[in-house]
Amino acid sequence: MGVVLRNLQKVVPLRRARLRKDVDTLRHILGIHKFDLGIVCVDNHRIQQINKIYRKKNVPTDVLSFPFYEDLRPGKLPCPLHRDELNLGDIFLGVEFVMKQCKEESLDLHGTLAMLQKESYILSEYNRLTGRHLEPLMKKCSQDR
Image 1 (cartoon, rainbow, N blue to C red):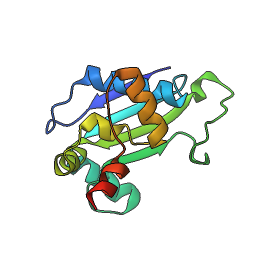
Image 2: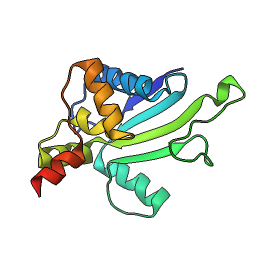
Image 3: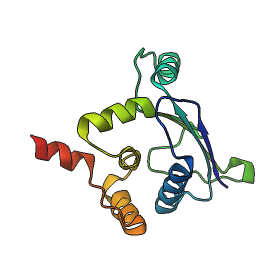
Image 4: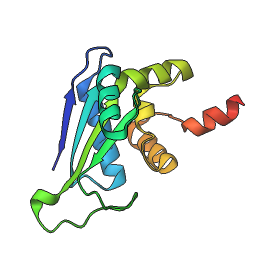
């Protein structure tokens, strides 16, 4: 059970070891560490191509997910019967797009990645386990208004 992490872009320098550690921490927090997961880091051009093909939107985006189980409701985990079904699917991260958002909002890239699900719980557990002090994006946005 693990993570396949691929960096197919060269626009944003990534520290793969740190990203893998962050993903493993998040998998532990979410209780999905027994499931396989694919994470592919891509640039704006590639994420735009994927977004156009699968969502009919010809624009870059931050995250596209392709679940292994199509009929699974958000927030629910599958109940696989066999080892080869212990798979959550693939996540494409538009790291160039995310980095632009981070620069515009003065945020950390890894902090933004931590907002994928269950924001407040994930952040509190992530901060506790890593010693970091990340804050929810929504808190920052509401303070700016």
